Amino acid sequence: GVLGRHTCERASRPLQESAPASDSAAHMPAENPAEDKYASEDFSKYLPESAKRDQSAQRFEFPTEAPSRMNQCFQRIKTGAMLGGALGGSFGFMYGTYAAIAYRHILYIPISVVQAGFGFGLFLACGMVIRCDEHGRPIMQPDGARQQLMNNKRRD
Image 1 (cartoon, rainbow, N blue to C red):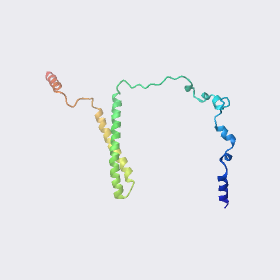
Image 2: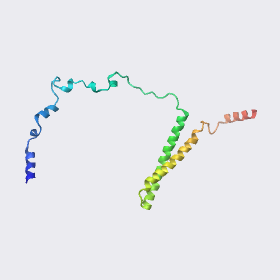
Image 3: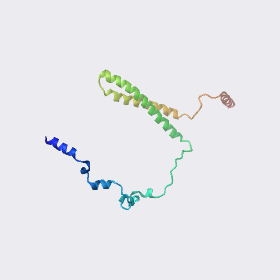
Image 4: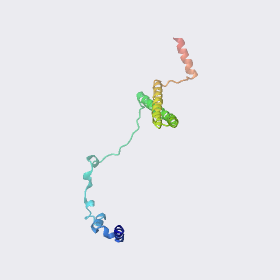
């Protein structure tokens, strides 16, 4: 009985009695801006000095020169390692799932993913290092270029 009595008394009270009149007035905006303390306050004092100065709009410009050979080589190595890691990780996940089911040990999955991903990533990165040494020589030369090369060798 006591719990039910208090519950009924709270439910029967009007909502206006629960909130004091002074609190509801504080949340309402004042009709007169002179009475509103937020409208009259200068909030720029909270800004950093860099925000108080006029600033020009920043523009992004694309680089006009080609990236260096070292940068290109590093990007190739990084791409090879990422592709190898993704490919090895996916094969490792497939093998790890099979091993986890066959041997009833769940830790085979992450171990095989990491091992296969690292192995494939390492070998693909090494393969890209070999490709970085190429200077853009064409694999097959046109017939005219081959003839000219052969003529130059005969003169020597």
